[in-house]
Amino acid sequence: MGHRLLTFTIMTIIVFCHSNVNFRNHSVITDEHTEAQRDFAGSALDLAPRRPPANTLLRIFSGIVCQRGRSRVCPPLPRLDGKRVLITGGTAGVGEFVTRGLLERGALVTTMSRGRSQGSARVPGITELTADLAQFSTVVDAVNQLDTAPVDILICNSGVLMSQNEFSSSGLEKTFAVNVAGHHLLYRLLIQRGLLAPDARLIITTGDIYRSAEHCSKDLPFDSPARTYARSKLGNLWQVSELSWHFPHLTAIAIHPGVVASGFAGAKGGLAGWLRGKLLIDEQAGAQAALIAATQQLPRGAYWHNVFGLVDLADDDPGQDEDQAGVLWEQLEWLIAPYLSSADTGSEQ
Ligand SMILES: NC(=O)c1ccc[n+]([C@@H]2O[C@H](COP(=O)([O-])OP(=O)(O)OC[C@H]3O[C@@H](n4cnc5c(N)ncnc54)[C@H](OP(=O)(O)O)[C@@H]3O)[C@@H](O)[C@H]2O)c1
Image 1 (tube, rainbow, N blue to C red):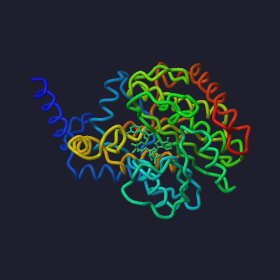
Image 2 (cartoon, rainbow, N blue to C red; image 1 turned 45 degrees about the vertical axis):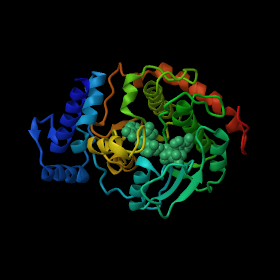
Image 3 (cartoon, rainbow, N blue to C red; image 1 turned 90 degrees about the vertical axis):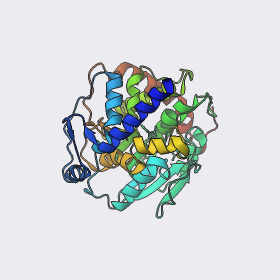
């Protein structure tokens, strides 16, 4: 009985996604209309702030269910000719398509990852650096390999959802180490060494699931994969608000790419992969949020969501907790201090 109900629910959602029902307008939109909507989005992206549903489950659910027809698409302009972009995880998953979109717009792209994840195909014309964000010394090594021309856009895209408790070489819970601390070290090294352009954009990939978390700290133990991941994504939002506070000349922006049928948190093959492909948006659609943040005039400290657009966060949103954000920033500064003080590879703590 339980199985039948589950199957029925899944099939209903699939049918729903395929028919592109637009809940908000209570109308059914055809493929032609969807294209028209995309074209419209492509020529004049709506940058007006919007308040998503206050209820967390409703917000996350409406963000997923409607996303196939309503994910915002990045316009081709403005171009990024000659702009230097550094992106973590830029050769696989959503990051691969962000990289491709940046190259199409004329950017010079350097990627940074462990080189383990497979993309759809090799991306030509990029510089690839190897680093494991959970192993701080490798991040220092990779930054040492950058040339002296400052980076115009840094995209902190790499992310993991750990299925079990693991620790980084610094003894940190690994989800926190990769998603939050490793990226903190990366942007702080770039800032310290004058490798970020004075008006650089710093784009950090969060996930709307952050809304289900209340805390993020280096001291919180792994409890469940989803809860631990959600906390790290809340930490990403706090990083953006703290960056805006500590470095007002930079434009820090948080993005939610959508819920994407990437290899993230699930297999790409088999029945599960097939279902994810039917239910979720593809990686190219997931790349649009980062491309929008890289090219459009979004305000400093903004949070861009693939469906809701520019999000107007309510005062009681956990992302607005300035006190906890400040505490996390201090913890991160303490964690990376040994690596900032040394020009060469620091030893792991
Ligand atoms: N997929 C979704 O539904 C979804 C929803 C909301 C937010 N997001 C966020 O979107 C971002 C991209 O996710 P995705 O769906 O593209 O996931 P993905 O397909 O699993 O790709 C993850 C990327 O992160 C890199 N990475 C993983 N561990 C790393 C490490 N220790 N050091 C350096 N790089 C590492 C991987 O490259 P290597 O393995 O080669 O290192 C890969 O390029 C993540 O931040 C994720 O949290 C995803």
